Image 1: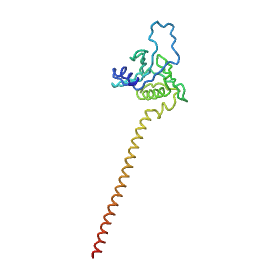
Image 2: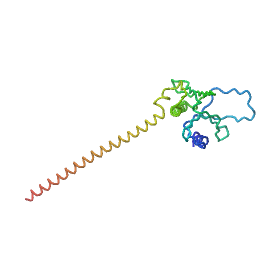
Image 3: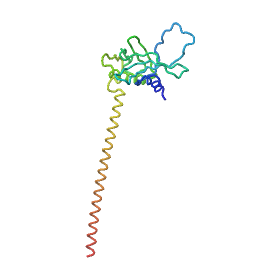
Image 4: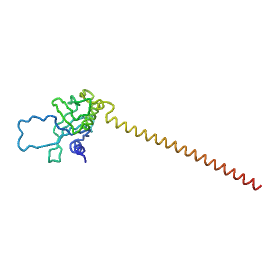
Length: 210
């Protein structure tokens, strides 16, 4: 089972939520901690997750989940509603890059995703989710590539792929039907030719007998 599947199962499923997206991140700038007590929890992995409740009316959350070194458990650290999200900054609108910022009512997080592709997928799904579940005030998406916000999102691409597959299958069936139709016509012609040949042969045989 993948890490994201485990997070979904451990963090969101027990609360009747469906995880829509998750991206592994690290901070671009470390927080300044004047004093760190001895025996701290050490290194950890951080994931930013988007989830929606299964119960209607739907409620969307953005959750920070951590897994500390030496532990197999995932822990929910911070959570915001989608209404608290004010801005998503893609940093560079001209190229794929792993950096992005999330601004909430009471927080600003500057992240680096594990890869540019992971970040792009996360922003695509986050944008689609905001458009669907935020009827009032939607967060601002800045410095994001147009492909992440427009009709070329992975969600539209997936739908296009399904439509294309259906069209190809339909075309293949039509072509097969046409080939079968032509084969049936050729078979009928051959049968007619055989019958005509048989009648002609019989006539010739009767003529020779006479």
